[in-house]
Image 1 (cartoon, rainbow, N blue to C red):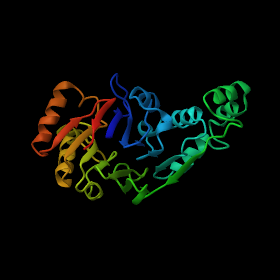
Image 2: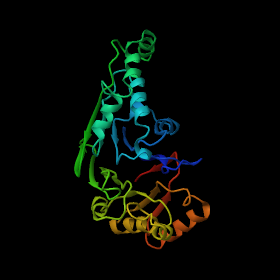
Image 3: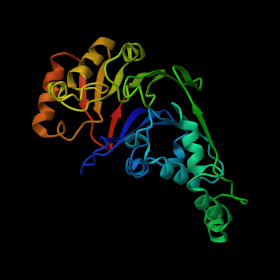
Image 4: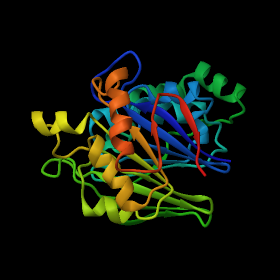
Length: 287
């Protein structure tokens, strides 16, 4: 079964029902995580998944609502491993490799944590009781900075990316396309309308788009540049020929029932496919 798990679909503004951004794509027995925002590890487990099942992590950019749970996820996945799991592969725009090194590398922020767990006798017993063997291995992650083009090709599915237009003067943002025998899903990331998104998402089955607020409100208050509103999301889906549009990264105002209803009504005037207003811990069968 191929499935999309919405772990988190909020913004940098925490609310009772959503905060930050993180998703998982299940492709048969493979699990690909996209972004790792606040509390993503806990939400992953609440969704019925386990950190060691994730073998690939794609980061769209390095705003905290997309990467703040990286230390927790990296350490938890390593701590729960018994040594038989595949090495985690992390891909993202610069400075992804540097961020990973600064967190769990030999001089990283969390080196005292993992060295204690590697060397403390009780921690070694816990590791052995889980099925691991001694000496306990140190954390190992394959992290790579990537840019437009092919990122992964497993022979079963592949990932490609394009630069998006979010905060180009300060951070590089990538959108990702995952192609599998079942179909194609695209994560637009945080972006405003751009030809790169249209090219990346052409003919996709599912388009996952940042949708901050009602378009007219964003156009009026100056918040439209570099991020997607309702009508920009609708136009992107229509222009690319997507079958389904998933709205994520939705702001607190847009999540109010009246505004959510208006958003779906406005989008339906432009995009004839199915539109899904994402909720945290939602599971969506892809094809």
